[in-house]
Figure 1 (cartoon, rainbow, N blue to C red):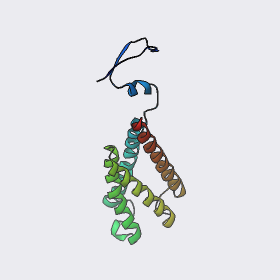
Figure 2: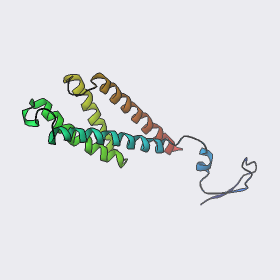
Figure 3: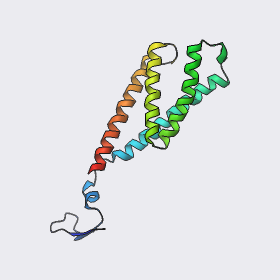
Figure 4: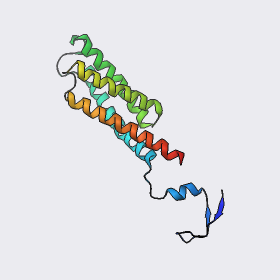
Length: 149
């Protein structure tokens, strides 16, 4: 703990205990907190997506999984596993969760490109995933810059 005296202190206090850098940050945006909130919101969405894929495996509305074409069945199983793993990692705000989520989102973009009927939204899914990835990178970059100060 450091004690510092300031001649011209706008708060009116003469002695400050603790880190002076934290006091100077004041009303700045806390990007680390925003990143964790963003990751948890995405985790809930990806958990829902993963559970919807498991619904297609365990209780299909139309054809059972073994009657579907192999690429579609493989994509359903892939997303059923990877979406839930990414959701857990995102909820924990761990780096591996972000990596798995980016991998899942990029795979979802690829599937929307090469299997247009797989996702209900198609191109909208691609755009949303791309936008979410950009927001994640911006928040991560800002949070890393915030730690440097």
